[in-house]
Image 1 (cartoon, one colour):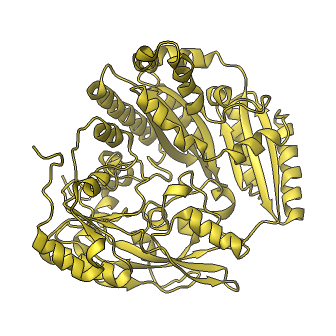
Image 2 (image 1 turned 45 degrees about the horizontal axis):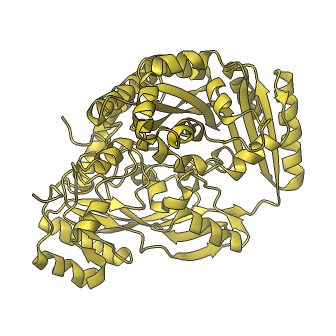
Image 3 (image 1 turned 30 degrees about the vertical axis):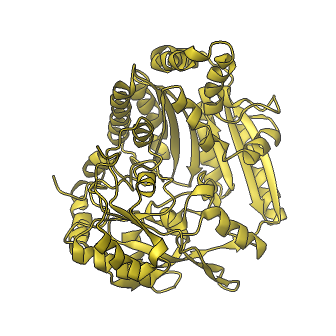
Length: 520
């Protein structure tokens, strides 16, 4: 019995694709196809780790430029082979799963920076470039891209555009839709579209936005022109502890209302603060996942055969853990970072300090924020410990306007607490609202029960978000996980998206099965 559920592409068809990209850049080897059976969605990760392969591609191809990508798409369209655009696979919503088999089109060979315009502050690059490599090269020239998702070491510019990404410093530099000046897109048929490289235009709808957030369902973004900024001459750090979430979020609201743009601004709720640490211990683990995973590590040496069972039981008792969380009285930690011109950063720090102290914030100095900055990407690499112990860990990032933010936080927690251990922090703040980034952990008696419980958590959280009037995703995208909630989010406007899909991709070959684009 074959390991993968989809048969590989025939040798004769492989040769046709090799004529386009070269012999070494097409693979039907099982090990390569297996590598593209999942993204970083927890459900698909656990399924693959347990040997349950639900989806697999028939081949993988690595085009080297836009022209090759165009020819690959045209041939796939002629042969009616599904196409799945793939950057680095760091998405967490199942957005690159090959649900109908087909051809994975991996863009990572397209990784050139082809222009750095100092006068206009625009960088041109191919979209297969890893975010950290783009940032390092810009730093070498005295600039920054200003885009710092926690996946920056293992995610691509194309992924940022396709999922409408927002990095950790979006309060200052904006989101990906603010940064994109222009782009080149290969349509499913192979036709190439290049937008004008202009700061804005009033010639009707901005068609760049049709492809940003489309998650590879309408085409493959192969080139982009993005804003960049001079590398900051200084960074200032600060932190405060507030008595509760409401006073902390009010401080954030007033900071943004006063025109201050902190590069980073993050408020942890009481439980997240307790696990992260209030800044009193220099070596405290900044990650709540690290603190929880450490439970298993501390007993592993004593009773190694019981670790997984013990941790699974620990995660299953979400009711008890959440009750204990309500007893935490350490307050809520707010960390801030300001960067740019020294005089401006000093002014922003002084004004923010006045606002926070006026609202009862206890000044904890720069150390907690500096520690967060130093270890800000570590959390993404601690989840494997949770999965090892047989539990699910996942994140839910929702957003709303300030007037509904407290209710959104309360309703999502109330909906999820019977099912999972849950905590949150507030980040990505703007003048008009803020996102809430929930982390939840749960487990069942086995992987099947755990998967069902994981789905129930998502359903409860999404329904609570929609009831309040928030959006079901701020920056992680939709993929498969959130597709069932797209109609309630968009209403009949979803038909416009579906019409664009039908026009550009009448055979439904470009990343099929995603974002609720197939009418039920």
